[in-house]
Amino acid sequence: MSDPLPFIASASGATPIAVIRPEDWPAFQDTLSPAQKAFAAHLDWRGQAGRALSLPAAAGGVERVLFCLAQTATPMTLAGFAGGLAPGDYRLERLPQDISPTLAALAWALGTYRFTRYKARKAPAARLVWPEGSDQAEAIRLAEAVRLVRDLVNTPAQDMGPDALETVFQAQALHHGAAFETIAGDALLKANYPLIHAVGRAAAEAPRLVRLRWGDPAHPRVALVGKGVTFDTGGLDVKPSAGMRIMKKDMGGAAHALALGRLVMDAGLPVHLEVTAAIVENALSANALRPGDIVKSRKGLTVEIDNTDAEGRLILADALVRACEDTPELLLDFATLTGAARTALGPDVPPFFTDDETLAADLAAAAQAVHDPLWRLPLWMGYDADMDSPIADLKNTGDGAFAGAIFGALFLKRFVTASSWAHFDIYAWSNKERGGRPVGGDAHALRAVWEVLKARYPKS
Image (tube, rainbow, N blue to C red; front, side, top):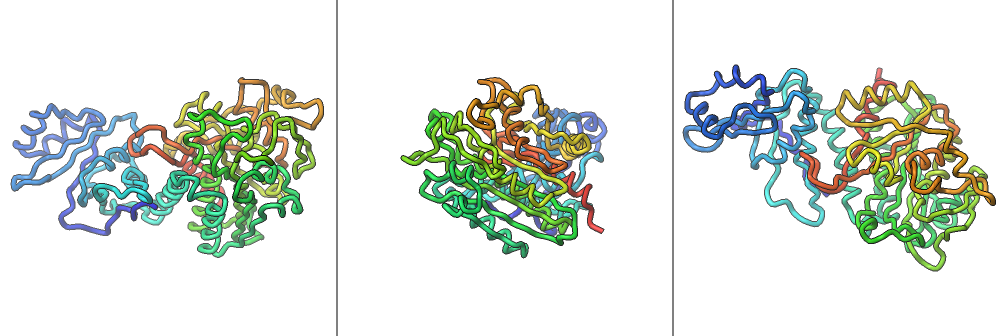
């Protein structure tokens, strides 16, 4: 769906790139020839942050590329720079000391990404000689995980419905030697997944729960759960057209859970991993779930459907209960759950919710270390009673337009018994070009969570 990773082992003719900070420019310009200094002065290039400069060679072509990185800019800013380079081979001859060569390579891979399933790119991506000192295996692992999320989210629902998404999970299980199972259609009712069935029963392709299990059962249990709504009309509480336009991305939580599971398996972390996804299309038909219906969950709690567009938390509830039945040491769920999260924090900063203070601190530190932003929002129990229903154990919405992301998390909390749990309300989308992040599917929180898992479960 996307191009091969843009790395090469070596290239004698690769154009050197020097990445500098603005304060480096006065000393660095002394390494340039008089002609190059004059060329830079002619273009008023004085080491301004965010600007690149291609220095011409005497015989024509480009001899060297300079890129100035603001002191406050993250290394991922290099992604936008890499994506704007002309086709060719390049090598990093200079990086600021605070930028990891591995992170620089990852930024290059993400910045040159293009989704090419339906439209070929106009020119090949710029290729990079592996930076000296980089962890190639880790850079490849992370780049492929992010590209998996982007490819899955970018694929329209016509080609990424429940059947296709299940096939992707099954392929990953097969590749890594993991056990795989799926429960679909009316079998969900027999197996006691009534909420997943209720949300997805109106679609042409059956709703389903898929589970991937990998690793030594004697190792610590880690469970990942993802929301896999392959398209969300809103159900009978139908979305306006503007809100429905990008709802192919509503399976982004499942894509994130799978990509994180792939990282764990690729790296061989010493855990017993379970990846669970509830996969449905929230469609419209005569048998669609109705506002006012009451559905009994896998846990036994009855849920009054206040709004059929709050469907993600319903399917996650059954999936989380199943994950908790195996008593995981750590449970993480990912979902494109609420527009309220975007209203609160915008498209770039996903909120997370947890009662585990140690986990919260670890996530915050990892997010800062790898430049993958996260922000903790509270599981404010003062709002919990606002989900009470007079005729069921709870309803699937809270108090009108307020605190929507918190209500979504509080709803899920009712179904979680794991001792350590975090919920990530992700966007899985870039709504405009953002320096190496093209418009379309994107990974959020993935690298930060991976950093936490690596630290908690190191390979011996």
